Length: 344
Figure (cartoon, rainbow, N blue to C red):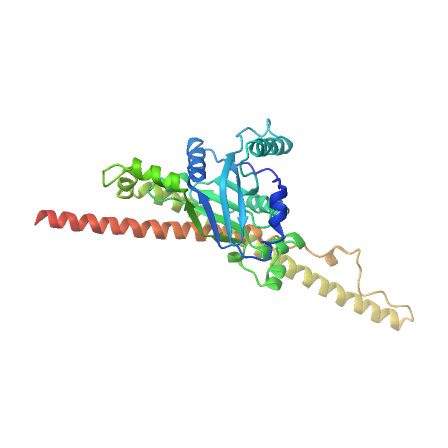
C-alpha cells in the first residue's frame, strides 16, 4: 500500500478563491495531458510498488484544473517521517513558485492494483487535505488495468455528509441510520477530462504516423482474459471472506447485547423481590440500578466503517469483472464471425 500523502500546504491564491468556490459544486476534473503522462510514468516505473504524488492547479468554478504534479519520494518507513514528507512538499512548492509555475495544491494522486483503494487510510488522507482544501480530489490510476487497453483513471472526493458524520461520531448502525447513509455515500466519483494546449495538439498532429493502428489498439484485441479475471475473482473472494467476518462481529455484538439485557432483567427481578422483603420488614428498599455492576456497563458497538469499505470494494470488483467480461465476449464473438467468414 502506498504511504499516505503528507498534509497539504495552501497558497495565498488558493485561499483567495476558497470562499468564492465554497458553494459551487464540483462537476469536472480537467487534467492537463502532460500531467497525465507524468502520473502514468511514475506509477508504471514503480510497479509493483504503490506510489503517491501531489497535484497542483486551479480551482475555477465547477471545474478543477490540474496543471502540474510532482511525485513523493518512495522511502522505507524507517527512513521517512511525516515531518520529512511535509518538508519535501513545501520545498518543492517553493521551487515551483520561484519559476512561476502553478503551486496551488488541489489534491494528490496514487496508484492502485486492480482497484483496491477503498481503505481507512484514504479517508484519513482526505480529512487531512479537506481541512485546508475543501474541494480537493484524489486521482486513482491502475497500471495493471490500463495494460488491458483501457485508461483506468478516476477522480474521487469524500462526500461532505460522510465527512461530517465521521468527524463527529463513530460509524455505527445508529449514526448511519440517523444520517440516512449507506455504503454508497462515502466516495463521490467526479468525471475526468483531458485537455491539451494548442501547441501540444499541433505537435501531436505532426507526429501522428500514417499507420491506422498502434500498440494500444492491438492490446485491446488480446483474447487472453484468464489472468485479469482470476485476480479479480481472487480479490473478490477475499473481500467476501472479510465481509463475512464483519457480519460475525455484528452478530456477536447483538448476542452480547441480548445476553446483557437478560442478565439485567434477572438482576432487576431479584432486586425487586429483595426490596419487597425489606419493605415487609420495615427496612428501606435498595436502589433498582447499580452503576458499579458490570452488567449495567454499556457495550461498545463495533465500527461499521470497515464493512462499508469492504462492500464498496466488492461493488468495484463486480463492476470491473462485468465490464471486462462484456468486452471479452464481444471480442470472442467478433473473432468467431471473422473465422466463420474466412472459412466461406
